[in-house]
Length: 95
Image (cartoon, rainbow, N blue to C red; front, side):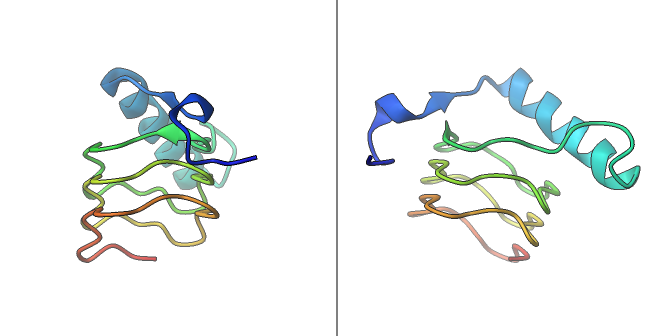
């Protein structure tokens, strides 16, 4: 099965994406006691502005991150298997 077709990914609204990032930050800061791990697998995050976000240990497998702003983003130990980061801004991102 191909993960490149738009029908395989679901888009997120800005409010939902902000909520997921907040819950993930809480999950990280509380040593997984509170909040929820970011599950952004197979989402369409094309052109999303995630600059400076801490998505370490998050699941972004199969996500479309084309032209996303990931500058300064912490992606340490994040699952990026089959994620498309074509033309994404990864300046100072921690991979």
